[in-house]
Amino acid sequence: MPLVVLCGFPCSGKSQRALELKKHLEQTGGRKVYIIGDHTLADDKNSVYADSRKEKDLRGALRAEVERKLNKEDVAILDSLNYIKGYRYELFCLIKHVQTPHCLIHCVTAPDVSSTWNRDRRPDEQYTQDIFDALVQRFEAPDSRNRWDSPLFTVQKDDALPLEQICNAIFRRKAPPPNQSTQTQPLSSTNFLHELDKVTQDVVTAILNAQKISVPGDIITVPGASEKLGC
Image (tube, rainbow, N blue to C red):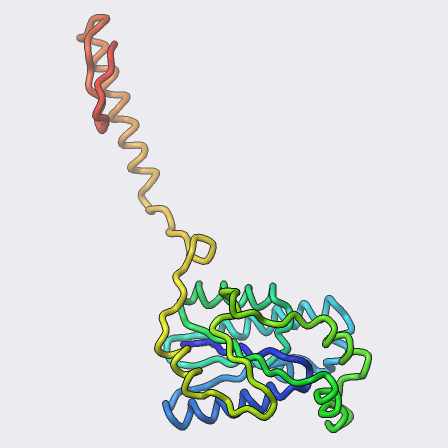
């Protein structure tokens, strides 16, 4: 079933929104809801986001976990920064391949408010100020004009989560159509080589037989061809 992608600055309220949505979906629809996030895969987020290789590995692990959770019945919520538009496009290609709807929830919180919330966390859960500032600086805000950022729900810190609209977007909207890059190409027929050999032999046999009884200028018919050939 659908994928819900959250994005926003560090400590902008994404995890709280994910839990709120999960509770609503479980209570109203009886669906299984999986929250996938940095906290489930990363031990020390400061060391991860300070190293581009580790961060890339984390994004790959999150994407792989999302792909494992997507099915016909459940809802997957990706609770991470998701601040790179190219990565959000990768997720869009994934849901096109799986043929399921998705939506994006952008938790909008001012940097100074997010920074305060970060300092209020337990020391082992905080971002260092340098890492926090770097992530805010690198953030690429979603744009609803982009297919991969639509439908987009922008939620301020004091806003109520638009639960009904989100449910409409992920349950009553058609999945985006697949394209050639996201479709699995069909395998060749297992007896392809046998059929090719048979057709080739028929053509060769017809030509050899025609040579025995034909004279220059005669027209011969090749099996499987609509046009006739001259000797």
